[in-house]
Figure 1: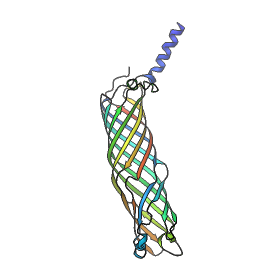
Figure 2 (figure 1 turned 120 degrees about the horizontal axis):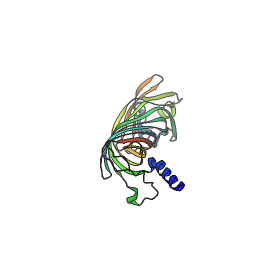
Figure 3 (figure 1 turned 90 degrees about the vertical axis):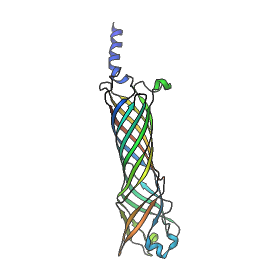
Figure 4 (figure 1 turned 90 degrees about the horizontal axis):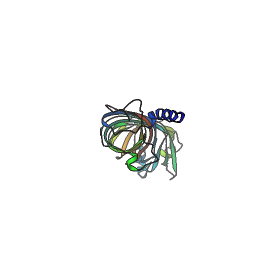
Length: 272
């Protein structure tokens, strides 16, 4: 009797975390947040009219320099529909933010590469249409996945608006911008530009048996902006106020994100 009672108690305690998830059939909503890692972006050029007027060979100043950022934040909300066979269609809204730290490798008059320190944020927000598929670990023979965990993959396409919010680059720009003795100067903007975007999703859902339809999710997302972009910067220096243009090459905004989230499927049947 003691063994039977112990087995019964173990079964009852394990039920909330060991129940097999059912495929989503119908409407669901979700949200998640985490860390966004933005790869260094290749700068296609910094065009400064007053420099190129007297040094045409510097028209491509900044070519192949690197825009660097710190680890940032990602937040996502979504609404979707499950077809009951593992396939899901989803509309997503997202926000990403990364602190700008510097542009390195800026070409100088003497042929060497310099550095401009940076500040401000790169902020991205937009919408994506995703197609996802939930796998049944038992069907795939993925014995290392507990029955309660549902792995899934997805692909998405959409549009992202990338804004340089209060972005600025500053330093002793004499050797870069043609002032023989050098002086402190600054490039500053709040401009943004949009681009077609694509993404891949790899995740897993852990259903909460006590609340039918509720699940905890963990995800990795890769997001890329497919188009080149250019930003108009205001250039400030002693006695000078003019414009410069900073360009970012195509396929050079690549984001890696890790997130935790929650998902709720409406009209879900209680877990067995």
